[in-house]
Length: 483
Image (cartoon, rainbow, N blue to C red; front, side):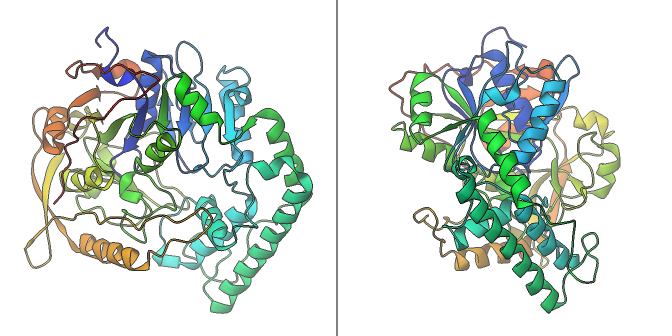
């Protein structure tokens, strides 16, 4: 590892996964925070369904969900800010804080600031989410079953009733909204029971819709009130002040190929997984474009659960088994495939380009015993070449109103069907996988991970540093791969 700090440590950074998730956003953020002091890690999308595994060089391991992955930085925890784009689960945050405290992090709640405007996900959202996923049977979408998407959908349909972080400090208002949520869950169960598609068992079962005992409203009100006493709730002026004071890392959740608009519908998330949210937050703070965008990718391709994975090879799963990834009761199996240059080109284009690349799992060729290959193209069933390209997402409307994106999602669903039928064009894995990945995507390498910890990273010094100033800077031209 080089002694000099990497060039992307000079200002704000936005970390985005160029796959289906699990590429290594956590270790990337951990490395960033180990090499430079940042004012905060800002979570920019998703919720408690995120699972960013960080293994410290001393062996401590934590799966980051809502806390930023800079919490185990060697010079002390980097604070976490949960932006308005995060769906906050206060109960899950408390459990995560407990594990961090057991790892030696003092008073984890004191590290967290939360935007009052952020939605919260509750046990009622989780129960409704799981009821819908059970009802899909063999047509599951691969939900994490934690209610994040249900919270987003509920807020779009009933914006005045959707509970927010700010509501947690006002028991009467929160109590009223939680009771309406309980009624909503009952309505979901009745609707699914009428259609005969519900299940009380694991996904794919049959029978009437039921589930665990319904949560108690008063217990949740008390728990959420305790949450507001532990963390610091902030208004919309907090993040602009933070961004002017010190550089931050925007930590994305999930991957671009699962994006709500650019992913392959319906196997997607209810979240914007591109760099759009960090760039929006910067623009709102009067700092448009003031971040280095870092894409993260593995040397092989993975995804959890159903949906297209063109370069999938089930035999690779046995030789590339991972201690922190496996079959999930709601998402389904952890699937493995060869490096997919086509999918990652699509992701780079869908997120509007990135400035640099972090490549993880570069030891995979050795671990796979020579079985790992390179997918440079797709063919359709008729033998013709297939190169997917992203379409522009529908323009957002004001908060709390639905976006009319039916035609766009229909287009993405057609693309998903085409990819499910496509076949990979495979060739030998290059001798230097990380360098080959950079060349295939037309991007400079910033760091390469040959193992699971920051100590296993090789940092590139190829790119000249660009000084961060509180007045911002212009981004250079970005190379993107658009078919």
